[in-house]
Length: 327
Image 1 (cartoon, rainbow, N blue to C red):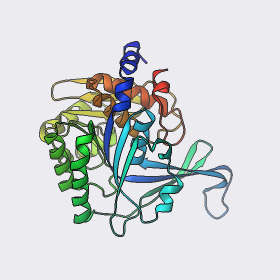
Image 2: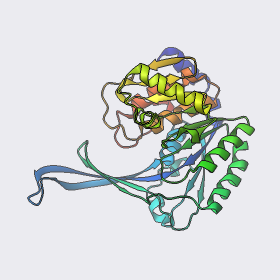
Image 3: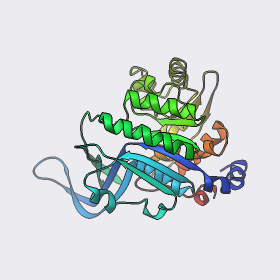
Image 4: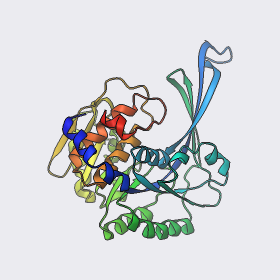
């Protein structure tokens, strides 16, 4: 990490400890089943995974919260809970941060927390099984509850982060109301998107699509890692939806920050990635935290870029501490 960025973080250590990020979004359960492949099945041309161990984690807004907490800040997290509470308790990675975390579960009849089950041969992913409700939409009562809680909690928080995983937490009306209420309280709002229609994010300060998400939002325009096309696509969305900045994450190509007038590229800080699972969560979490303590977007993105480069060298949906980031 550049020396000046290290100094910025060190000077703001106390401010980071006092910062509280208000996170809302889809909670996901991650399950990893590890084993070894030594032969192909005689029943079909598929590998046989010999079971060795398994691990659980929190994905979606849970992983975003974990990343912020790991960096030393505080989180208020609002999510749709599960009637099967044992699933959440069994994998509560946030327990050690309980002094810094306020977790608010909203109930919605018939809902269960989505699960992503990954089968892994050593470090190679073989298959992912998703178990979730298709086309789920929140009830009117749940929407109203979220807005009521949000209105109370935003006054105690420094920045708002919406983690949209497309699992049904967010709808058009909820997005609109959350953005309006954030602006009314003079807070910054950052959105990690999943929807095709970026009009849903109208008025947001920063939206952080990956290249695939930006491509879909641009009517499946083939961006093909062409920098000019990426910038033009992002700029059209910015002007149409009154979004201040778009940060495009581009895997091994790094990131591109786009405004209506300017753009800046950030090269990836590592060439070797062990596991990219959850890297986007690390980016948006560290970006939000740095913005919350008053660092400008360009420096915040640089720090987020280093954070992403660190976590992709770990396995599963990982997080890192400030000491790891600085060193």
